[in-house]
Length: 156
Image 1: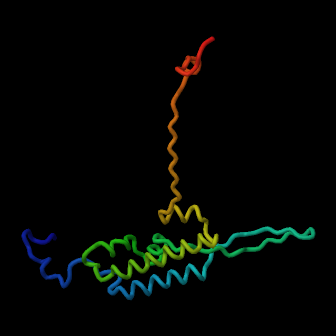
Image 2: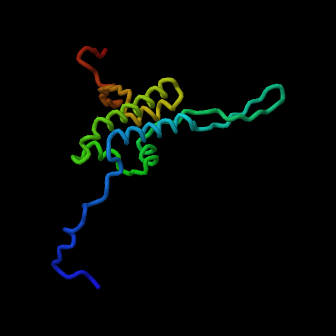
């Protein structure tokens, strides 16, 4: 049986909406640090093959795992972490989100600068670019234009 029309049962709720995933900014920062530790302790593996004196050897080489927003959100089980920075109900989280952004940026930049991460991919991800502008003014000339006599030339 459905509830009667024009009822006020909703007013009897003890709370409206669901709880925040992180009740305090400190908890978010602690959990983000767990993600950073996970990335550091679980590097990507690249298999390298070496040949020396007729012996072929395969070995795994650790590769730096870049910190990413998407990876952090996946680790935390949240799909919209950046809303903590923009929505009024999360105003207490703004400083922590900025700190997390700086940690991610610095780790990627440092890794790319040390050639531990692909510098081209990281530069694009961080919005860095090496812009060079070249302006060329080229006038189109035809053979007929080249064969026309000019004021300085004399025909004999």
